[in-house]
Image (cartoon, rainbow, N blue to C red):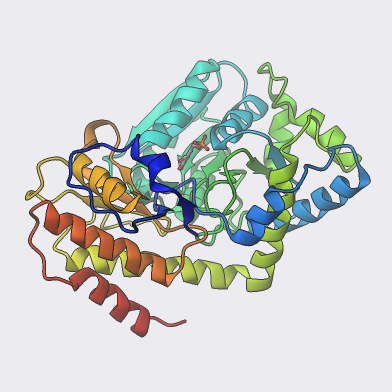
Length: 409
Ligand SMILES: Cc1ncc(COP(=O)(O)O)c(C=O)c1O
């Protein structure tokens, strides 16, 4: 998981707020604990370092075919999964431009930065956006969805996140989907960018109409690939969509898919890496993957609580990322982010917008294991104590290791 760099290479970019004691005198291990990009397994890095395949060759079509099958398994769908050379936001935009038309009414659940993004994209394309404002750190209530749908019966799509990465909250996808279906014909559109491969989201079984994701999260790849799967109902809605589109026109992708290709020059190396990831996910099985993420998240939560910290989304915590309130003993949460970076070359995520300096976030989706969790908790404890927060030495690591001992495999 760690990347090795000589300290000299990174020192220039480091702030000098803290007396710097290096973790290692010769090399520095860069460790990412942000909710994406996430670490990439060595086996995959090896594939990524090879010369790229040409995108119009039989060899690549073979890889692409395997990946498309593996993605269906991951999305738990019989429908094709589109691969787009873009970041996750590209798949969000592709969803809007392929499913809707100017003036269409949609409902966006805004419980954080990414909920806000659904609304922004839709508004930019001239959709009429109704918004449910959810306090940061909370999950949306199905009652609020039902009321909005009753108040605006023409709503054609309900856009929300599964895991709202900016707050560490998880919205109840299954219940939201059921509520939408009970009250309208609207499409259920889920941003699963930090949820796919982390928690169970059986797309077909739960009748989710659009599910989007990205490569740099639970798929353990660098950024650059986005995914989008649509239900039959969403494919029917595509026929009505009048929004202009070119690069993200799924008709072009459908045509290319028919010949085992992609419409444009795709991210061939990432797709080669994805083949390995998906093979391994299939070997492990989705239930094991979901239980594992739950375990890492549970241990992280136990660890931070044992250090006297409060979870930011205690009632609906995401299994992908744990958001933690900065304790009153530390005046600015940015100090935590800087300390971990300067002292240990660890990257965590801070808070965004009004929560800048007030929360910090630890990602644990993708290629993390139990020892990584003990590492980040141990580093966090040193950091907190150095910054003046009192906690019992070893409390966080102790709670997490007990959690791992007691948790079912
Ligand atoms: C839930 C969620 N939605 C959307 C995005 C945007 O994805 P990208 O940065 O890959 O465009 C992110 C990125 O962190 C995310 O976590």
